[in-house]
Length: 580
Image (cartoon, rainbow, N blue to C red; front, side, top):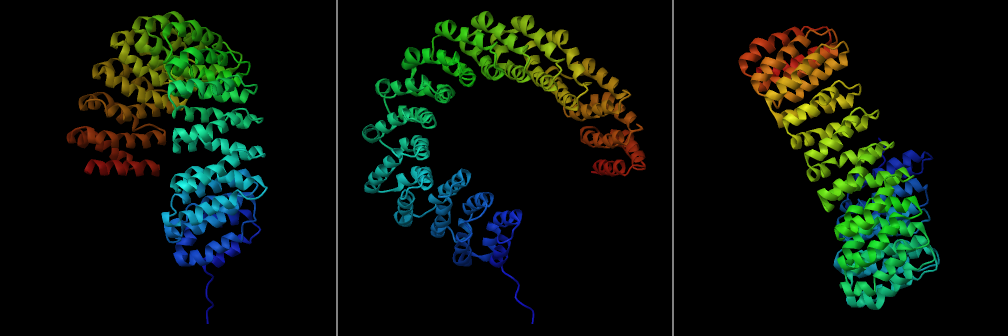
């Protein structure tokens, strides 16, 4: 008699006892499939108890298990049985490895919201109380991560108890627990009314901001922003502002970095009056900070901060700092500045942009660091509407033309993507005079990605300027490329025709582009002939049936007899398009 085959759990047990860690990992990754095969009842009675017994493995395996447990609810019978997963996840939330604990907390957060109300206090409040017991810090730190999901579902009496538990976590001797509690405060604040915050939370917030560990103090910045939304501007003036100003002058650059990185949120939370009176001098100090990391963070926030500051103060305090930062010794600072400085144009207007900012833009456009130049190019469209054609032509166009020949292909690619927007603003005559010839050089670039983007660029320009412009400016270059000795350029011709055909009239396709394609159908390179077939397939729906029968089909018939099987294959597909 044939023996019974091993079931899913038996197979899983065998694989998880294997010495090969990759095999164990693969088994864990298939937990959902195994649970689905077992069904809800066997998953509850066999699979989950077994998983509790394997929680001593390599961190990599435990990490995968922590993630997969969060996906099992629907396979073990739904929300009514979600509590069964709390057991193994609680064990994982206690392990020493940080990434495993964090993943376990993520999965706990998924499951906590699924626990039905009637099971809430029995399973979740019990979970919190178990996690905070003991001397080891790991379960306490994990407990902080689920607090904001449990608190709003608790009764008033239990909420009072939970706040007391949270306070003890905030006052823990172990820095890792205090850091975890501080990190979660910004999620807890929105759940509390202002009176409870004033009585129970403010002292905790102030204590965090003075903590001996800078890893705790830096998190107080986000908490201050969250608290500021709960108070009036007058209350923020006396309660929140002093703490955040102290953080901005903290001895640790990490805390100052956090302030700089969240300065726009600070401005929005504290309001216009506090920003102009108190935050502006702080921001200027951060722009001049001795640490490049702080200057980098502050440099990327300039335009956001200046929206609430009078223009005369921007000119007096912010712009001089920006001029200095544009030549900062740190490339990271200049890169961050370049990502934001163009946005200032719309804030300060044409006159100040032309007088003070234009030279900064030009300085950064010539920076030796590629990413600096790229960031400026990416935001050129923010400046052109503000400055107008005269300033663009006189100052920016020479720099753009120079960058179009930049040694870094990514810079040339960014210029290509910007040109159609510039074309619309310049108009056809000005464009033809200054940039038309430049656009044609892109299609013959030595880098494939440039040539590919150039074909899309030509299509967008044709959409802006029309068929006549195409015929006089683009068509000659396409014909020239079709005769190039390098087959890659002849291939680019076909790519260009593929892209342009969807924009042009049927008459132009038949009279101007189709003859080029037919000529290339006899090319000696199979890849060219193959792409000819693909190009025919694009053109067929766009032209009259008579053209298809008299011009396209004869060429495709010849390609069907080609020696190369790939050419035959794509030609056959194109012929089918003809018949359709």
